[in-house]
Every structure is written in structure tokens, then in C-alpha cells.
Amino acid sequence: MSVTTFAVAGATGRLGRHVVEVLTERGHRVVPMSRATGVDVITGQGLAEALAGAEVIVDVASWHASDQDAATEFFRTSAGNLQEAGREAGVARIVMASIIGVEKATAGFLAAKKVHEERLLSGPVPVRILRAAQFHEFVGQLLDWQQGDVAYIPALPSQLVACRTVAEELADLATAPTSPGTPIPEIAGPRREILAEAAQLLGARRGVKVVGVDGSAMPDAELAAAGAFLPGPHAKLAGPTFREWLDTQP
Image (tube, rainbow, N blue to C red; front, side, top):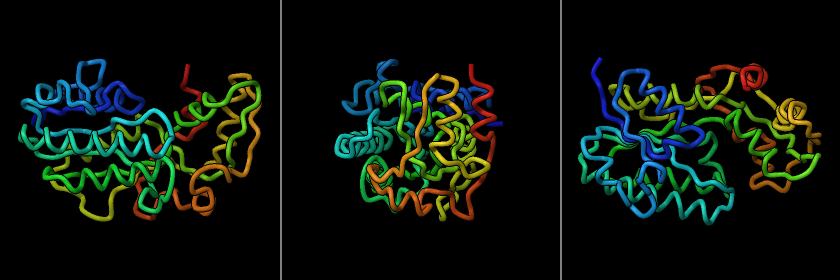
């Protein structure tokens, strides 16, 4: 097996740490890029140094909140910086993690991710995209955003997938000899779940009562309810289920 040097943007994040782990386990050289390692994809600080000798950039850097304008600005700026610095460093390709259904989004975080895809694709360095379902870890984030003993979680369909599973698929895509072209590959969990029901399983462990609501306050709620953000027929489905994953968590 040939060793490739990967620079991972967002290396200390929820998905990024799994990507670093998987690529390292497979014997590749990994350069973690995050503010913690002195690399800032927004200001560009440390970017050129981190990309020196890198062959592939894996872009899993993310914005920490759901505000559309702030997230859009983050992704537009980070994508532009990665493309420009990647071109100057002679990087062969950029591989990014996106979200299933992003092309249909009209508002919120998903609309910002659509801009992320478009901005990366408009640059000189070739781009491969993997679209993933919502992570198992996202359910805990939904609970964290609410205060008190009761959490109101939308009863919307999702095909939740583990971050580790996404990282493995992203590593496969990053190391594949040829680009998959279209349709853009998708990775999702093994079965459809309802967000509120998954949250109830986690809430029971945390001592939080979870009440399912219609989710109409969320961006593109009608699209979500109609299954617009569920995997397409060409998606790869991989475990564990949310319950199986939860049973492995400390």
C-alpha cells in the first residue's frame, strides 16, 4: 500500500478526530489542521505550512451553530482558503463531507453546506464529495441545545449514522484511484429512525424527558418531513443502528 499524506481540516472536531484515526490506522501520514494545532482555515494562519507536502486535503471543518448567515460565511471563506492554499501547495484533490439532501435545502445550516459544496467545486483543485446522513452524535447535540428537564425534539425522519462509519467511507473515497463522478456518493445508517425517538433513548440515560414535536420551527421542516434528507437509492447503508451505537457509549 502506498502511503499518502493527508491534511485534515477540522481534525479535532466530532467527525475530524475519527477521520484522523482511520487514516492513521491505515498507515497514512496525517497532518491535523485545527486552531488547536495552529492552523486557522478562516484567517489562513499556518495553512501553507500544514499543506507543504500534502497530497490530499480532507475538509471536515464545521461551524458550531445553526445560524445560516454565519455558517455560510464560514464555509465560503474556509473553502476559498483551502482551494487557494491547496493549489499553491500542489495538492491533488480535496475530499469533503457534506449532508444528504443538501441540494434541496433552502434555509438553515443545510443551505450553508450547499454554498460550501458550490464554493469548493468552483476552485482549481479537483473535489470529491461524500454526503452523509445526520450523525448519531447529533442527537446529543440536540439535547445539549435545550435547557431543563424536558427537551422538545422534532419527530422528523432521519437515517442516523455513526461518525466512525462516515470517517471510514470518507477515507475510502479519499484514497480511491478514481473519482466516483455522479451521483455524489451517500452514506447513511442501516435503518430509518425518528429523531425524537432516538433522543428519547438518549434522554432516558441522561434523566431528560424528551417530547416529540412536529418540527415546524426548523428550516425546511416540510421537506424533512417528506423525506427529502433521507438517503437515495444509490446510498451505502452501514451500521451500527442508533441503539447499538448508544450501547457502546460510556
